Image 1 (cartoon, rainbow, N blue to C red):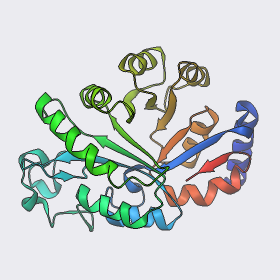
Image 2 (image 1 turned 45 degrees about the horizontal axis):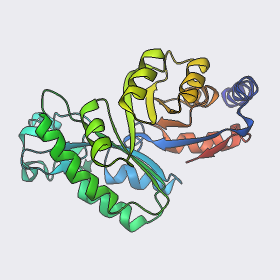
Image 3 (image 1 turned 90 degrees about the vertical axis):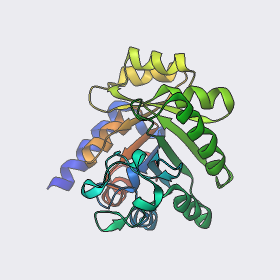
Length: 269
């Protein structure tokens, strides 16, 4: 019964939003944090096995300049935080049942796979923890590391809530794909923030976003991504609003349902 209602709901979304010609990227947020241990190799492997070639992750820097994939600064089990710890103190720690992953390990995985099509690298440069000098150091290092393994034709993005790394990367590497993340919906203020910064992509909160606002963002030349989505209905809503990208915490469940339920939309995973 629930599946039937979902299909009917999605059909109505398609009619309402003229989604027949729409293409949208659905990608695994933190590797699929609603189904797996977030930002770990186990998560990325599981989403990849499910057919995903688009992912998102978070990057932080240890006190000795090593990059770790952690959404929050606090380490598991009260072991301190990433920025105040050395890499050797973090190695071996786990998120759930999976080992904490370092950026170099992820990049090795990307290089071995060879067919990753889309990746968002979020720079977690909290203003209380990262000086401007730290931000520039992070940007210089990770830009070269990441671009060295980027497959031909893939879209790799550097993203952040913090405008400092985005401004630095835009100035230093002008052709870089950049995306501003905001905890607000798509609206006049967030559209203006992205355009004034000079980035071409805006990742905004799904709640509060309307179709007219997405259309306005498109007129301003912005690509729109919406988050968070830990429910199939949320993903369907993001698609119906006209977003080009919708991140999901439930990649396996999403892929099982969406292709069958929304055949009129060109969904790329």
